[in-house]
Image (cartoon, rainbow, N blue to C red; front, side):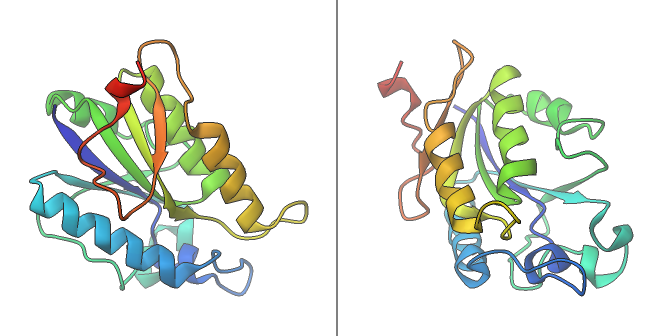
Length: 185
């Protein structure tokens, strides 16, 4: 089965925060886990795809770039988006379909926005998803703390399905590129 590692909005200013926005929860662990999974993808010959949000740092300068602590290979494909949903208006789905990708491993920011919509949209569009439970993050909100948001989404998205395709949540230490979806079907 062909698969890809999809890293969403792991951008400098989004992870580190700025004068208006807080840094994401547990940012050092997030960066470490993203790099761990990138290394696993490289060893498994799995392509790495990054998506950047054009709203971060107004789509320019170093704040917009993928975080400087994250390993970006020269082979990585990069898409820029204007919407919360990384599949909307980007060509990402066409790219994955043209590569015959059937399984995506998802990581990045922000949990309740871009990560949630990516997982749900991927299943609707014929992909099985592994969400890396310790590989996505967000900042505290006025209503919930970031840690609660992350735990809630890991719980909610584990087993999310649309009949044919679904998502599971696994952690970065696991063999993420050996999908477990068939054992649940």
